[in-house]
Structures are given as C-alpha cells and as structure tokens.
Image (cartoon, rainbow, N blue to C red; front, side, top):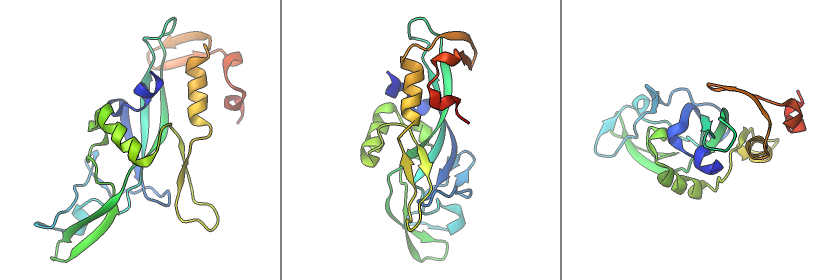
Length: 185
C-alpha cells in the first residue's frame, strides 16, 4: 500500500530535474514539461530541445492514507527519482547530428501510470524513496541515498503514531511517537 501511494506519478508535483553531478537543470522546461527531444528528420535549434544529462527528478509527493483504519492521514514528502538515460541523436538547428545522453521518457513525468513507472523503477533499480547526494571527493556522479527517508516515512505511517489533529493537509503527531532522528536539528 505504501509503495502504491509513493510511486504513483499522478500524485507528484515536479520540483526540478538534475544532471549526473546533482546540479539542477534550469533550462529544460517548456511550461511545466520537459522540452521535446530533437530528432533526425527535423532541424531543431539546440536551445529548443531537451538538454543532455537529465538523470534525476525532484518530486513532491502527496501521500494519502485516509483508507487506513483510525486515521485520515495525508502528508507530503520530497524525494529524488532516478531516471534511466540512453544515447539520442538529433539534428541541431544547422544540420549537424548531435548525440546526447539523457532521459528519453515522457516529457510530463506525472503522465506515467503506476504500471508504466514500474518499468522506470526496474531500469534504475530504485525501489524506495531517497535524497540526492552530491559526489564525494574524487567522484563524478551524484547518487541517491536510500538510508533514512524511506524508513522514517514508513515508521511514521505504519507504527501507529497517535494522531492528535488531522485537518486538510496538516498532520500533527504525538512527539513521543516520532522516531528520535526526526527530533534532531
């Protein structure tokens, strides 16, 4: 039930896309969607196509647990989603063929069904939520840390935290029921 709610792209709001070094890519949008991929039959200016190296998406997830017994819980969490990349050829606006390494999926990540997104998860190996970790000394690529975020969120929702107030999207939990790590600054 947890994964079905967390990995449901229809519940996501896209907050940004990141390259392999963990740097946000600000010029990848047309409206709220990724720029289109260029192609070989059409000359498309470089600035009008999806940039290279889109590796991660930061999403805000609305998680609804109102179907659980004794709790109308709705919460939100930010997490990074790993995106599979492949080589893609296109003609830049002057007729030269360019090859980029990037995400070739839907330009609207929220358009995936849960079943379709299972394929994306299988390609990247991401089975739980996590945070993007910048490359360490001597490393090139950022990674996703799965160490705490998933465990904390699962603990909050599955260990029977006592709910004091639940209104709209605000949730107040008993401080005694929170895992100690959440109380640390």
